[in-house]
Image (cartoon, rainbow, N blue to C red; front, side, top):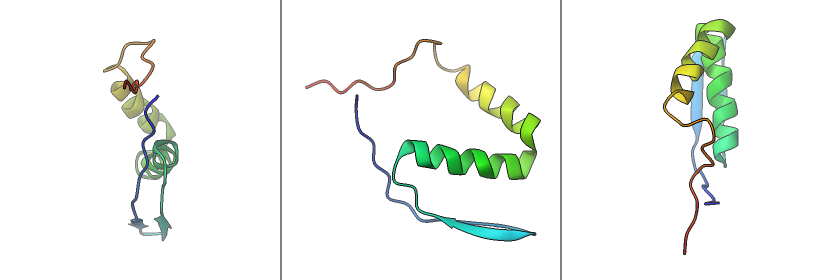
Length: 68
């Protein structure tokens, strides 16, 4: 598998508060994104949105394979 690393500083604000994030992996970025999506849309709408993204990929997609 290919290793993807992320170098980002994310600052998110909403009327009730704010957060800062520094994800280092796609998994951490996904957790942050999903958390913010649920805050913005609510649980059901966020799940619907995410399901639409998964429709782009075959069910058995194994990710990027690193070939040398």
